[in-house]
Length: 108
Image (cartoon, rainbow, N blue to C red; front, side):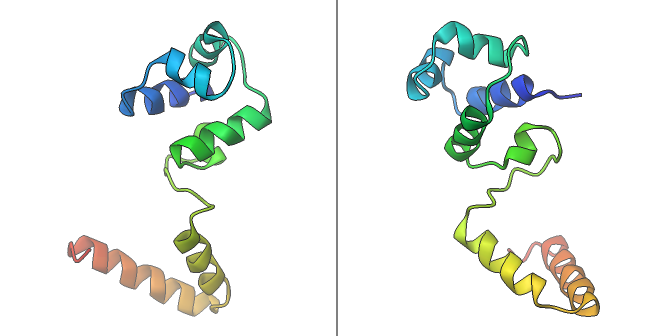
């Protein structure tokens, strides 16, 4: 099971960044950042939000509530949600089915 620190470490490593780089970026001590990554310390919600924004992921992803790395502030995402919320339950299901078929065919 992943914890917050594991997610933060994975994002940093995948971005090929060093702990000291992100400690500077977030104006915190390098030791504090290290403790975040080893789950010895938990960042406050303000830092968690900044980390999510920095890496373009949701807070839910960081907190291991989802495995999807989406950014809910992305304009296209907000537009999709706005449209989706206006559909009936039947239309939502039809749309999801169409998107699944589209993705499975590799027509992206």
